[in-house]
Image (cartoon, rainbow, N blue to C red; front, side):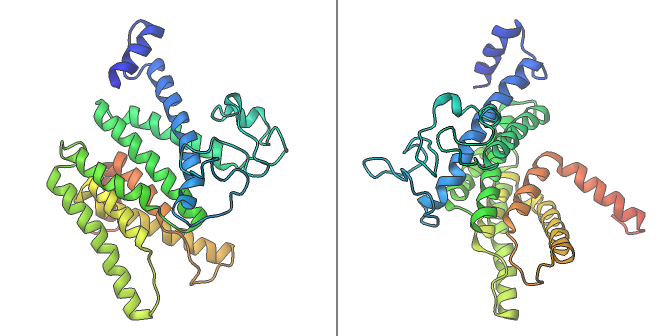
Length: 297
């Protein structure tokens, strides 16, 4: 695939460089297309797993099938089939002024937001990694985390249809030490699940309530499989810190209740993506912060 990008860029520029404008343009286009697919997945996976029955017009193909490919993209309000030129990432959203061309229903911001995020994930992966394997691995992981976060925000649910395959894909990639050695990846998956499960068990015994969902266990296991067990402390530190800050802000500014449910998946996902790219920088910054407080690191 990397060679195909090289050849495609060579047609445009005569010579390909990883950091060239042509390379970034091609990867950005791939990211936008991936984002368009992710927005479909975010809308359809909950229904495929029986959690959402909101899509009524043309909710299934004539033969009753409903999956990521069938039926074709359509307006959920009037059933209008989306033409190819109405499905160009970001451009079509702007050209249509965020409304269906048939009935005028507003198009969700989910679509351009997902496309732009997926594009950014792809471009940053190309920038951060010199080798094609880690670069495309980082793209795949980043795209999965986008979809997981969006679904968790909307449905308070992390889909097994994404998380479980990604655990195995991460382990398979690290069989070749793409991001971590095989042993660290295996123990990372085990430790990720076991740690949050243990926290949930202790919290349930102490309060009689469930504090963390099972999907979060699997998501941290997925990140352990991709990044290795040594990355989990950084992921946990970032996710718990950012989650606590967000929760406190919600209580102070939005008058949320102390026991209000907040989806934790997006915080874990964001922490995993940041750790993937900047783990060493984050650890160094944290160490410097502790040293300024006079704490040995």
